[in-house]
Image (cartoon, rainbow, N blue to C red):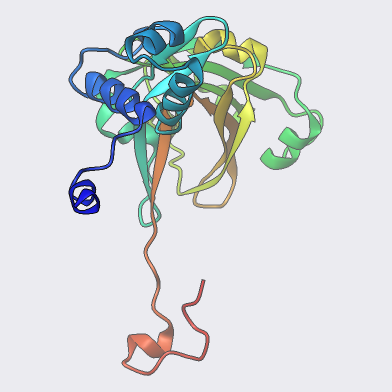
Length: 264
């Protein structure tokens, strides 16, 4: 009889899950807003009559889910909501064209001729004596920094742009509409790095926080480089990719796929 009655009971919910779910629900219901400081580990341990280790376990799960971020010596905070843009390989577009573009503004940190490293000249296919323009610009969403741009342009392009222009519009739209050199191809590479101290200050991040870095080259119809640079994004930013599979020639005409075709 005892076995039968115990089998019908629901298993007890672990305390760390109770804590995690309670905080998750509070964030979902806007009881805690992005940037809010959560109760301390000691306070939560007392509230749930448990140990600090159990509370830490619950908080770590929320950090893994991207809902909470921990700052050493300060506490746990509600994370900023994720911001995303979509890359479609069938169209040439740029991140400023996404839905949040209407709230995007720029702050030019610096613009003008600069001494650059050899790899920048090599990428732009420039000789040693040819001038290069450097752009340092902060991208803000609803007034909050989201990305830092470090970009280099050959004089053919850079001399036709001004800091005033760059404070108002995307580089891509300026190249197309003001310079008359539309971009027809992007070369992109994405990696994760630790934010440099100088950039951390602009992005309002602690030194050594992870950031997403997008290295990119813009090319025109003649495959001439118009720009090379890197954009560093705060950690709540994400890029969604749209990839479409291409049919093999024999599949397109109704034939059977070749052996091994289509495997990734």
